[in-house]
Length: 78
Image (tube, rainbow, N blue to C red):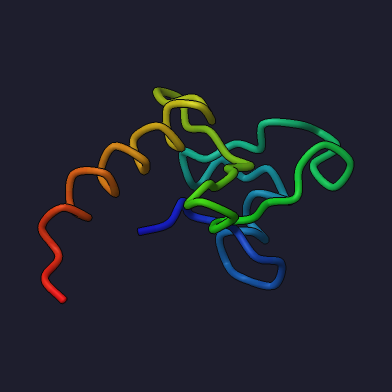
């Protein structure tokens, strides 16, 4: 499970760049390239979100992802 990342050239990213308000997604910073890498899977399971919603902060989204990973990782059978 990853945190959604809006890649350039996709319909959602184009909508965000145009500021249409079509989706309940917002970049957390005006200068995303300078402040964030935008990785969705890093070392030791870390991730970074460049987005927030009207109800969930960037921190909320990453925290929810980590909670789900912690819970379901226990249930995976190898």
